[in-house]
Amino acid sequence: MPESSNRVRLQVLLRGACRNEKGRAEAIAALTALGLEVTGTGAASISVRASPAEYSALFGPGSKGTRGADVPDSGREIVVPSSLADTVEQITVAPRHIQMSGDANAHGMPDKDEETR
Image (tube, rainbow, N blue to C red; front, top):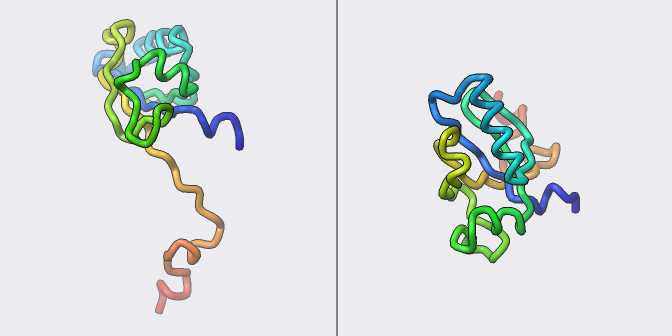
């Protein structure tokens, strides 16, 4: 299992006034200072990852999910740390993605021939 698969994926929504190059740069600097790994940026959001230990240390034991101590619930909104409050509006746990094979029919999806009938 790759190392990144056990990391907690978070979605960071920037405050309206920070949805620009300068605001993103400030938020990225603050996030990396907290030990979070930035994995992507958008116009209004930043994607980050943290190890389960980093996640617990940063967001506290009350932020753990129902599935286990080190696995927070997808979609769960997390309290924004004070060091991020000027740039970050919201942080949520990113939903887990379902890995699909190349065979769409194996997942109950119609194949191309069925769609045209």
